[in-house]
Amino acid sequence: MHKVVISGTGVFTPELSISNAELVEAFNRYATQQNEIHADEIAAGTRAQLTMSAEDFIFRASGIEQRYVLNKSGILDPEIMHPILPERSDDELSVMAEMAVKAATEALAKAGRTAAEVDAVICAASNHERAYPAIAIEVQEALGIQGFGFDMNVACSSATFGIQAAADMIRSGSARAILMVNPEICSAHLEWRDRDCHFIFGDVCTAVLLERDDLATAPDRFEIVSTRCLTQFSNNIRNNNGFLRRTREGHMTDRRDMLFRQEGRKVFKQVVPIVSDLILTHLADENIAPAHVARLWLHQANKGMNDLIGSKVLGREPEAGEQPNILQDYANTSSAGSIIAFSQYSDDLAPGSLGVICSFGAGYSVGSVIVRKI
Ligand code: CO8
Image (cartoon, rainbow, N blue to C red; front, side, top):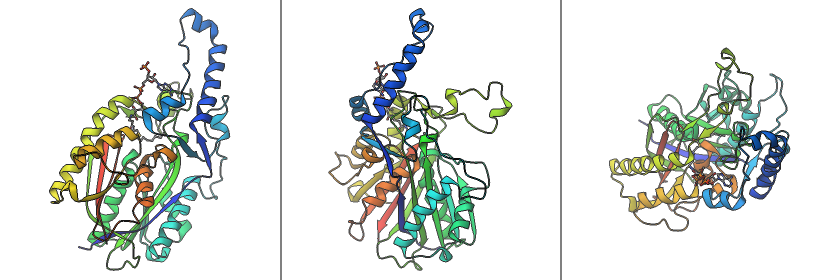
């Protein structure tokens, strides 16, 4: 069995961002317009009036201050309220593959590796822009990687499940190095006309290079000490879009359940104990006392959720820097969130330091990765 390390990470961040103020202003223009258009139905009590969104609610409830997006004009136009991404021909690199190539190039450079030294690509994300061929195989082709590639989807936990899949393959000898990429175009499966969730998500792509430690040359690398994944069925976060859509009556209508929807409060309450229990059991099984964990890189959905999980795991309030958040800048970027945090806040750790990368979300799904700085 080979020892496996993370030797490089990369983050592709879109150039455009939307502040809470811009988002709320656009939503409230849309809501006002709709209320005017449907004034008679609202007065007759056959339609509910749309309520205004509020910047202070968004920051207080989530900790989010802005989000990056691939397209801004469509999202902020009350007549459109979704991103506009030009269609590409089958011969052009797809959007998700393009984002992945950018993040992967950074990860390879950090690891001091060329594509020829990589044996596989895993594209782990909460949505893929087409059913097949796999985005991972397109990334493999674009970078000139030999071997194989495949897509996987475990919603917000895709990256940690992808790390486990890659680490297991490298450990057992079926690959020397694997590139795991997480292109997340959350803006395209978010309902920007729904006040309860319009502020939650952003776009980004992360990449992680995992390889055999005995072949790795990067000075800054993290050993994968252990991984643990858990799923438990729940309808509280759900998206009913899929290829059976055209088989059902009314499939052409813009149905709300064909985009992300959730029972946010239930998710918050139910997921926090599942996550903290999983991390604590995982650490105990590896004979690691929580006091010896130098850093938690948690999924980036909600600041309050992270504060609670951090306190439960460490048995006290986390100190500044022990549990870095990036959600104020990026919002929830699904599977990429914990990897952005890891990428931005890991260089300063001393050799031997232990940390946990943990993601959680739809499924429910939770992934925990214990790492040690080499
Ligand atoms: N402005 C003003 N008021 C608002 C707004 C708004 N924008 N939205 C809601 N309110 C109001 C509500 O109407 C409600 O009013 P009232 O009390 O009068 O009924 C009040 O504010 C409180 O509403 P909530 O109970 O909904 O608010 P919460 O305090 O629960 O906060 C959160 C909402 C922030 C969504 C919170 O519940 C949360 O973060 N929960 C955790 C969610 C989570 O972690 N989800 C993970 C999902 S991500 C995932 O798994 C990946 C899926 C794939 C990616 C999808 C990409 C699109």
